[in-house]
Figure 1 (cartoon, rainbow, N blue to C red):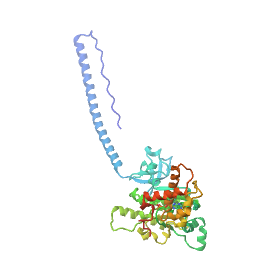
Figure 2: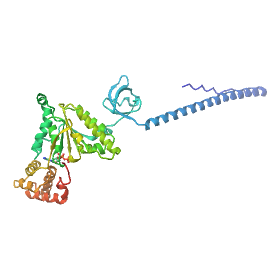
Figure 3: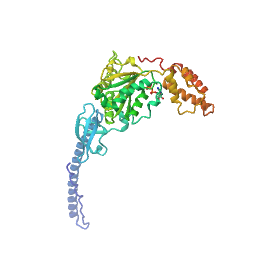
Figure 4: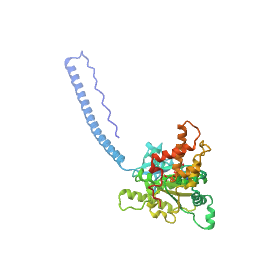
Length: 411
Ligand SMILES: Nc1ncnc2c1ncn2[C@@H]1O[C@H](COP(=O)(O)OP(=O)(O)OP(=O)(O)O)[C@@H](O)[C@H]1O
């Protein structure tokens, strides 16, 4: 920028009052002329300053307009792979096309950017914002447990299903060489289907616990409802997360939400669900069958599933998890009252008879409710009568809901 011209000095002249009049007049006239000259210089400087101000104003307006455009235009999401502190540069990888670029860090963000951050970049890959953890949909949409506190001994009445899950999920993780020796691939994915509250999630957690694998759960319904437009990216993130934490069990609950039979209507919502499912299938297709990641999905709506997900190499092991039978209900009652102060006179076999149609989750509520009756009666021991009252209360509360299989179609 050009420097401003220096301001001329103010003319100053001492006029001797004792001078003769004509000389004083001459001196005053000459002083006046000096003043006029300085005045002219100042006004021309003022004009130049006004002109420069006009130019600067135009420049500011242009920058502001550019800034607005930058702010309002869409930004891409990328992940910072590496930060070169010395050079003030970073390598970022754009989501979607996995394009990697070396970008210069502006001083505004340089201090805050770290490898692994999710950032928003503009068309020229300049980082505009570092995304906060809360805006990170990955963290919100997945439940990650290093070691779930559930073991096979906590699951009652579905011994056969436990055996099948162990064979299809646990064994390939624990003894992959056995599959290699025999020359077969273990099942790619296991699909658990059956009414709600029968222990499908528990089963997946128990396998993760038993194999020291990280349990990563994602709910199909959330994928579709909460993260509209992000479904397929989240599926990709889900598998990436699992790869970072091997061994891992990926559990996709309510898989019917993303894998329903294609409907006739082709709304944009359907297209998005379809894309999410295609992403899931392509992740599974590109999967190392004997690897350290196992996939379990669950559904209450087997009838609605798109058969494409059941093909070999995908969810090719189907395990039905039914409602518990009489013996199963008795076992589940015993499991859920293990830590309760239950009187010896409580007859679990009789209670199992009384609870036909109850799911495991219903039985858990029943045990809690019986405990509430004991507290209400100011006892610290639970009697058989408390369980009977709890059965009556649950049936009164919602006669249609207690019998959880009513209204669910699972095959
Ligand atoms: N077979 C079972 N043995 C012991 N407890 C059970 C069993 N089934 C269900 N429960 C109890 O019910 C709760 C819910 O079970 P879980 O979440 O595993 O059911 P789910 O089949 O995955 O249901 P949903 O289809 O609704 O997701 C469990 O936390 C557990 O306390």
